Image (cartoon, rainbow, N blue to C red; front, side, top):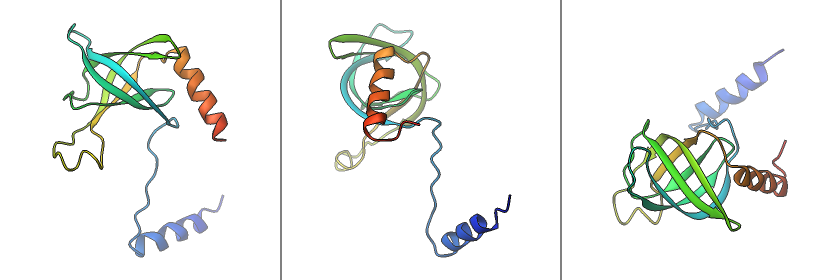
Length: 135
């Protein structure tokens, strides 16, 4: 297979100063906005945040709470009247500390979920179908 056209295309963009971005995630994300309770797996203390997007393998939880990659967490929310419980590991953390930047960028954590709840899987499937992104 001749990859020279692709190589030339990339070289033109790189030399012109345009930065190419490759999606690193294995699964497509869909928007979701639902209030969630969450906490560290080893603690009973609960905090509140919002799940703002979801994929087949994880969620992004918008919160001001500081959690570090590798920490185990539990998350609870309600979707269509059904309680959804998840456990997982913080994969990445995004801290936005300046009050004026909060309106431009959301702080929170990306959580790789151990086992995605069936209600969330159904939600993802339906949204991807609606958007024509389900393969």
